[in-house]
Length: 341
Image (cartoon, rainbow, N blue to C red; front, side):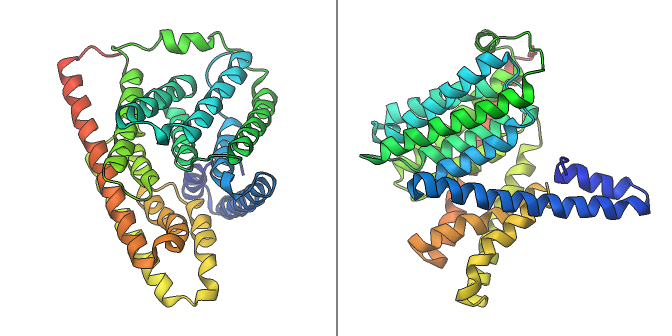
């Protein structure tokens, strides 16, 4: 039950016939439990803090799942403080960044994402980069003003308390020689991890800036697309860009088709069903397809079915192109700086 979908599928393929059934049952039970807990957690969170903080509910749920197994790679006391700092940056971003002039808008997002990556993702292979960058994009992409600021602050303080308890409970017996400040002193131009952090922060910030320049709706989609391509430290990025774009096109077409075929009284089931499917696979293409259903289920209420699908494809295309530009720029930089650690 604690294994990832990919690990369970590997077990299913490699195990003797008698054990395959137990692993298959574990895969489905894990997915049902995770989906049920997600619905419970997000519904409870929205009930406590209001629908204006649904982005905090989703982002904190992702953080909760990650922090159970993955810490930040340095001492626990520092980790609890740094978690508070990360959430404070997210709070500031969700209140002020969207009102800044464009140059400062870009700079604020870049420095915020870079700070979060240095603080939480010194080891890219563990996945914290995706969790915290996604949460940052989602929460700051749903800004608050007026009385809602208080509720946003209270919700993030609650998240900090909850995650700190989980962090302490699950990791207090692990000895870590490093301190928080070591993550910043290890930041240097000759490190591959530093280049990955810079590339991801620059790419996502540029995608968000482009959405502002072009006055695009659903700016977060550009950020997600760019982030999704740039997340791996080493991969075939051209192939990954193609998988992302083709997945979004296929997913958007399938969603539009389902909305035309499925009776209106049952369309609310599309997002949960595909959410269940997400838990059964770790295939990047299928994730890109299935993620469209959850995203478009919300967007259709704002733009209509066909415009939402077109917007989904267009925003993702731009985000992917931004990612491709930064992949190329950093490859050129690596070519001229071969001595990287």
